[in-house]
Image (cartoon, rainbow, N blue to C red; front, side, top):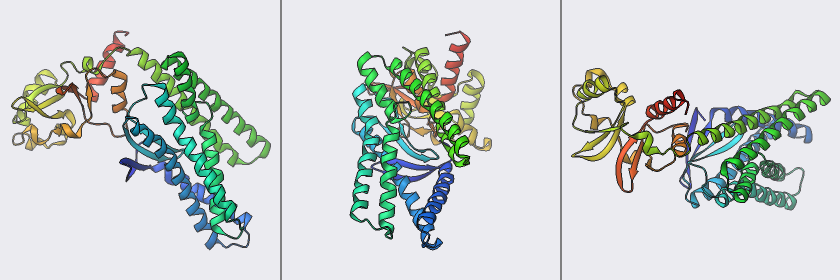
Length: 372
């Protein structure tokens, strides 16, 4: 998601809010205030508005807890999580790559709904204990209890990209041993659910005449788009099956000493050989990577005075992958919201090169032009 505001880290996982979140929190607060105003006519606006705002924020706290469950299980099982983003449709955990085993996929997928259902049950228990229609604490617990139960059950629906769709994929994958086929089936189920949501929402609107009933159409469209994207990614993975990161990076990012002046680099490499990426070394030992963008960002008047090691990105600040990493996994890094300027490639403990988005796009275009 773009236009994301970073809030900090929870359990070491970066958490952010997309700009669209502010729109939905305002809408939810407005709807809750209207509901509270109808159910409790003796309450004034000075009571209903704060209560609605607090309930709305706590709801998104529940969504965050749901996503944290996915992320914590993923990191526990050895899969890095780049961050969690709250946005208009709830939240999303940006997991670095897909699970390589069906049982890992199953555990990560089921964690979120199970936590939401457990949290909903606890809150309903709190509401039962504190039952009092004039008690704001009871109202908040009851509202959040039902919404968490609904969140957990809804996400268990068997259609990708919902958690239930991922659970379905894990089960089919475990039975067939075919990840791509499992993804295709789960994504088709997701498209089917999307069609049901859209048509059901439109029918609901026609029968009731209430425009707010159409909001489910947005959820349906989101599901259909996400499921279609999953199908596209499956086809893409099939297209690049067997291709490794090392094959893409061959001769793409050459080594050059860090003491080289920027002006010399531009004249010798960029202009003469159209090179766009460099592995910066110190006495032959890799220390960083210099893609094209930092040079573009440096004023030309400084090119003759700056050494390339002064504007490079250090190896510690870049993702490091094995040369045997599948090309499809390599693509995931550059499709992130804030993609790294380059990815360092290694063979065991040895740094052997790097690759940038430019080389990735060049490789893909070449294969497409050759009909591969």
